[in-house]
Structures are given as C-alpha cells and as structure tokens.
Length: 346
Image (cartoon, rainbow, N blue to C red; front, side, top):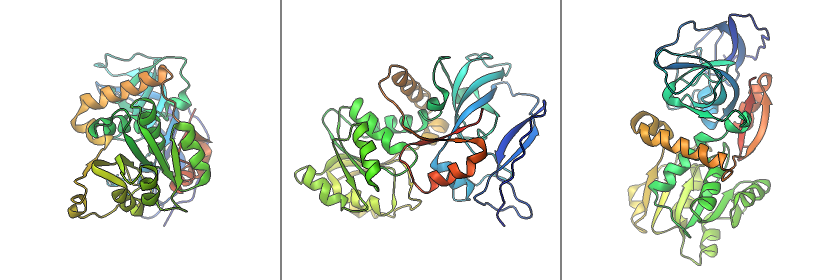
C-alpha cells in the first residue's frame, strides 16, 4: 500500500519538519513522501554537526531509494536527501573545522536525511564555503562534479582527447561535459534523448551533439571521429545506450560507468572488451567516501575552488518548494532535465 502525501506545516520550537518515507499499515516503499514533524535530536556525537538546511538536491539515487530500488534498503521511516547546503547551528565537542554560523556544503552519503529543515552530518562530510555563495547552486555542485573529476583522472583524460558523454537526468552528464571541456581541454560529443537537451550540452561546451532517440550513437560517433572512435566514454545512462558506447570506443580506449539513470543496469560479457582492447572502469563517490577518504575530501574541495574561481558552473534545471517535493522526485525520475533539481527547504 502506497502512502498519500500529507502536509503538516507547523513549527513548534523544539521540533522541525522533515520529509520521510513512511507506511500506514505495512513497511513498504512507495513513491510518495510525507512532510511531518519530529523532536530535535538533543545531543550530538563528538564529531557531528547540526546544520540548518537551506537547499537539498534531488538526485537519481533519491528517486531509487524512494521506490525501494536502491542498492541499500534503509529501515523505514526514512528521510531521503544527501546533497545539501546550509548553515551550522551547533557542533560536537571534537569538531575543529566548523563554527556556528558557517555556511557549508554537505554530502550525507551514509545517512541521507537532508530533506529536512535540520540534519546531522559528520564533520568529514562537510565543506565550508564563503558567506556570499548562492546556496541553491551550492547544493547542486559537488556530488556530480567530484565524481566526474575522479573518473576523468582514472581514465587518464588528456588535452585534445575525444570524449563521448551520455546524458539523461541528475547532472552527472552535464558535469562531465563541463569538466572534460574546460578543465581537460577535451573534444566532447554529447549524447542525450531530446533536442532541448542538445542545446544545453552545446552551451556546456560539447562541439557536437546527438539525440539518441532519433539517431544511432555509434554511427554518429564514427562519422564525427573519421571511424577512429572516442578515447574516453562517460556513461551515466546505462541500459541499451551502454551497448552503443561499446561500439563507439577507440582501440585501447576507456569506458567509465558513472551511473544508471535509465534504471537499467547493462549486462556485459568480458569478451566484448577484447576486440578493441578497451578498459571498463566504474566510479562511485560513495566508495571513495568510505574507502579512500583523502581523495574524496580533496576532490570535493577542488570542485568548490573551481566554482569559486568561476571556472565551472553547475546547471540548476528546476527549483521546487518543499511542499512540492513529490513533483521534484517525479521530475528527476522521468529524466525531464539533464541538470540538477533543487529543493528549497528554508
């Protein structure tokens, strides 16, 4: 049984609003989020920070977790949202890098919980930003761009390399176009499923674009590269598009799997990599957060610095109010925009 949306818009002094997945009769996942209230967690752990959330990005992972299709199934009730911006309200006794009033960007990849007026975050998952930074854009910045930065370095992307980027929803594809073009000086072909998205890809720096709902990606890429193929492919779509990527790669090239916005995980035989001696790499920012934390921390900080230097600019496609959260989730799930969708929590 799926929940219906219910709005409880009141603000008792000792409580705060948050979004949650919850059930009325059974512990089942549905597509609807409710806005409810709960008591504030009174005591912080030593390394925790209490943040007043101003904005929270709605990512593809949020849509998957809300329908029970994520690789980690949380206990219900559950608060989604992991990429956010806000202001520090309180710090734990061992927190050294932050103080009350600091503006921050956060990635709660362990606990999610950021679709709320307040959330708790580990010190290691927060980054300080200047007071004058626009918090809606800040909430759309680090997850996609840091993932792509690590991926590009894993793929040894270099000056003048040809790159294919597949784009659907959530911002990963656009971040790949932005960084490949402006940081690595690569020659980018952008592939997406609508004509309006091709315009956005060209604005981000793609020299050539294809609407893969109308044309064959592999044939287009081979024509654009004089039958050489591309050196690096960033695939954020998956499904049948991934098979087209295999046909588009150059000998000794590299295909980087960034995600599956199509919700279809492709199956591949390792023998398919042999004809072109190509490499297949998977990149998960969550993996780096858990296992290579220094790379995770440094990559996010690099992205913040690039943004502050006006070197990169995330594309915020839509802003939604808190009360319209289910529309925001649907917007991302249906792949209506290649850019970020951001919730205004404040």
